[in-house]
Every structure is written in structure tokens, then in C-alpha cells.
Image (tube, rainbow, N blue to C red; front, top):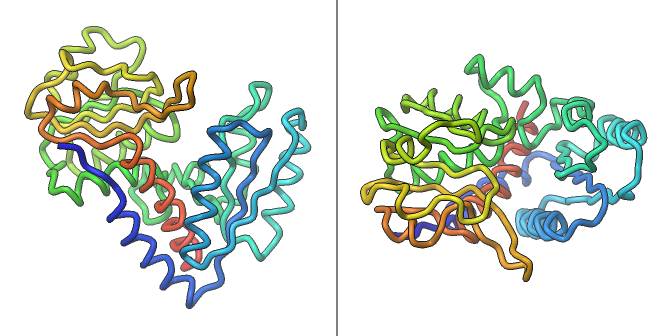
Amino acid sequence: MLIYGKEIREKIKQEVRQAAENTALGMAVVQVGDEAASSAYINGIKNFGQDAGIPVTVIKLPADISESQLIEEINKLNNDPQYTGIMIQKPLPGYMRDEVVVNSMDYRKDVEGIHNFNLGKLLNKEEGVKPATPKAVIRILKANGVAIEGARVTIVGRSSILGGPLAVMMTAENGTVTVCHTRTRNLIEELQRADIIVAAMGKINFITADMVREDAVIIDAGINFDENGKMFGDVHEEAKAKAVMASAVPGGVGVITVAELFDNLRILGEQ
């Protein structure tokens, strides 16, 4: 059974819209270059903001901007009170240090929850904003009645914005978590032991039907595009058909992730 995120997204949108009626909220999205997939994602953010009554400003910067110039632009946003949240669209050019750019942002405006300060609060189990895509993964599981507590959770991918923080958040939900990656031995065995699989490696159709159990729940957090611009996840459709439940791509985790950015914006506005 395929599960989708539209209803969850709409519920979050309603909550954010109500918050915006009482608190002035505004988001700035920083885009370096004009990569097609990034532009499509940003359009989704703009549309959500319009529906929720929250202004979204896209700061488009040239692809050859220097790291120091980008940080200077971010500092301007840090000091501009009209923006209560900032998102830095990735990927950034290869010559830039993502961690330096991200941590130049005021952590009190970090709608993605990926500033070192906010990740530190996550590790310490303190209240605050959490990374948007991991939040979306956990929300779609809970909304569909999937129990995380006591479940064997296998996450394929260990990025600092998804796999890493998701492992912490799943552990906080009392799941028994295994994080797999390119150096993992016997990956198929790890996947076949899992009650819940989260695919987050960014490789099109990487997980196939022979790798999963029929009673597994699969959350596909991958977003990949083929040469024709069609979107695919990290999990092959045959694997999703075999599983008891699997999230759709497109239409699953991705649409909730955008909503979670605005939920974080709401949280930041209340602090």
C-alpha cells in the first residue's frame, strides 16, 4: 500500500496559518545558481507560504559567488527583522564548505534545524527545531499508525541533514536503530531484518524487492531525477509493492518536508 503526505501537509498548513495570524513570520530562501531541481523545490516553498499567509523571499545569487560573499549575504538576513526564518538551498557549489555556510546563519532563524546549535539541542533531547526531513519521516509513520517503539529501524544513508539526525530522533522514539552506508557489509541482511526501512542515500531505485520483507514498512526519502526530469525515489516500485506499506515518490515525504520547514518557522516565532 502506498501512503501519501497531502493530508498531513494540509493539517500542518492550517496550524501554521493560525500561528501566522498572531505572530509576524517571514522566510528567506537563499539560492546559489539556478539548478532545476532546486528551483522546483523552492517553488513548492513559495506556494506553501502563499497558502499559509507567510511571505517567502527568494534571494538568488550567482553560481560563481565566493563563500565569503555568500556569508556576507546571510549576515544581512540574520540582521533583518522581517525574516524570522532562513533556509539555505542545497547543494551549494562544490568549492564551498557547507558546514561553514550553514553555521554562519543565526541559529534562531534556522528553519531546517541543521545549525550546529540546533543539532546539539537535538542530541541533548532539548526542545527546539528539528531537521525538517527527519521530522517528516516520523510524522508520516505516526499518521499511518506505524509503531516506532520497539521496532527494528534500518536507515540507509548517514547525511548530517537526514540519516544522522533521523537516527537520533528514531532512538528517542524508542526504536532500535541501525544506520547503513556505502561501507556496510551484508546490506541485504540488514534490510531484511528491518521492520521499518528508511531510504535516504540519493540513489535512484537502489533498494529492490529482493532486499525487503513482505511485512516491512518502507519510507522512501530519496529524490532523484532521470535524464527526462522524472522524479524517482531510492526504492524500486517492485519493493514498495512487496512491502506492507511504503511512501510514494513523488507525493510522500517530500510534500511533508516543505510543511515541516514552516512548522519550524512557527516554532522559532514562538521562542
